[in-house]
Image 1: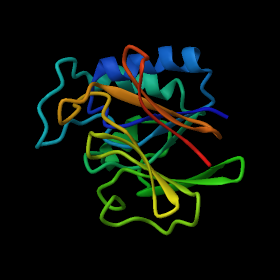
Image 2: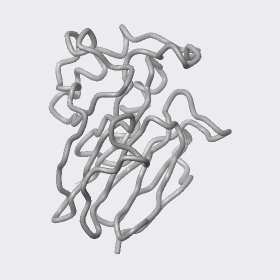
Image 3: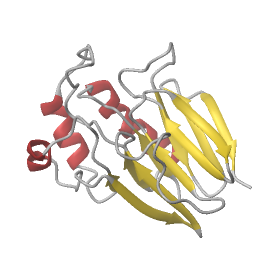
Image 4: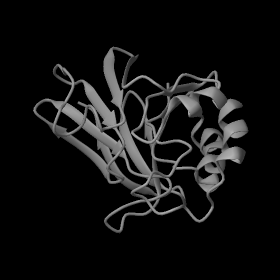
Length: 181
């Protein structure tokens, strides 16, 4: 199974339209949306291609493939227009027998990790910085931001499978990666 991990779209039409390319290029089975989907938030600049109304039908077209969590910029109003659940602070699923724990990062994050066992994966967004590392016998992953990257990182997305996690630029070049033990 291949999972697209995308975070912090913040209303960027470019971020939503690249999902269609990624699905074909990487033969994606599941889309893991790590929050902050439609709204840019009061602390962020407005993405140049900000157009949440056009993002809604693109994402709803993949509603049967999306697992999502609530970002700090997501609200009940957003849930009213999106046809897949977005209001859970945490979601857990498995790839083969490996537990994947997903959260946006504002409730559970680097300073407040959820319960993890050896070789589990914690994947989150929120900080807009790509991460792929093993720490304390579990994996910490962040695909970075698809709309408003920080610290001079490019716009990125991640692909997760049973072998590991690769972070790609929007040019589909590997930016960071980690293999699972």
